[in-house]
Length: 268
Image: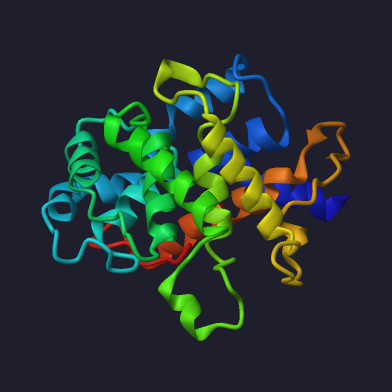
């Protein structure tokens, strides 16, 4: 338990507001009304990695030629901002977000579902879920998954697997931004329609390795973990622990590589 407490204390450090916020709300199940959570939320935009991106926002948004350069192009800056829980209505973000959304260069007709899902999830987190392009492309993505019986990608021409499994988590995260029967804050994200819900269920089925005779360890992705408790009695939910730990690691790696000076480099 001592190690567990040390990890939680590390996640709650003040230097990483997004991770502290996620740890409080998703791991310790703190109410959004508590002073701890309200304060953590109020400091989200102070995060060094977020400020580093915004400092060079114009440079990123104006660079179409390297939009998908990993992990330095503007698509990735949008993804990082969403994962760092940035406020999508911050003055530095709408220009880039709307330009990326409306140009639709991240939409591919032959594979590329992973990029499409990443961008859709990101703009929904940044509160552009009600944009007509986002609504249309989310529905189109779901329809294609159902029609193709999974994720059809040209990269699978060189694989023994009939459909791409590596992109499944990205699609599930995308559809999870728009859950069935649940209205999210601000009205920026609508209800999931039957097509999206069906595609999400099929994604979970594929991740479990139970589709088309494909065996694998994908079931680990969807197993629900049992809640535990800290030594001090705080409730602890492990279902999002990996996400929070990963975000903490990304932030620290970013700081060590000096991303705030020019470009982002850590991999997700």
